[in-house]
Length: 102
Image 1 (tube, rainbow, N blue to C red):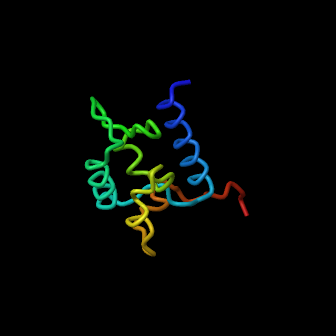
Image 2 (image 1 turned 90 degrees about the vertical axis):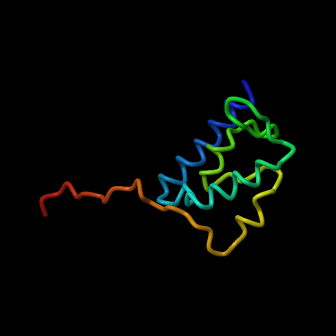
């Protein structure tokens, strides 16, 4: 299987598992911009129609918005290692509705 396709589905699977567990899966837009700025200067960036990481094969824009997984070379660790990682959590969640007539 193509590396890019495998990486995409791996990231998607992880995001789905976190979402189902009720955990946040998306970082704030400002945090995403900072991650993309780091990638712009990275020697592993592959330019093309969609900029991608030549290490993992992921689209940089798509990977930068997800909370996990991080940069495979650890280039986001200083940014992501902060105690207050800005996430947008549970905004896709809808409240559970009881179906009982109690």
